[in-house]
Image 1 (cartoon, rainbow, N blue to C red):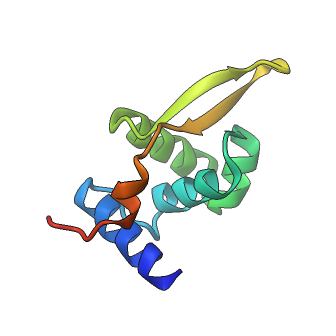
Image 2: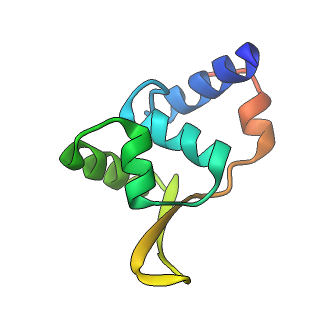
Length: 95
């Protein structure tokens, strides 16, 4: 598990996302739980409302996450992690 976290941290660090920032906590939550509602992610990130939305916008701009309408409640939005190849998470960082 430690090796996986190190590789994950290194790889996303190369893309400009640090694991222990708001963005990192959002990505880890999405990896563990799949698509999540904004409110759930906000709580999991432990950040302020403004900080959370800025982090989501940064992740969207990098192409790491997508916001979709929740098919069960059209008022809500789901954030999903875009497909990340498993080999990216397992490989050694080379940045």
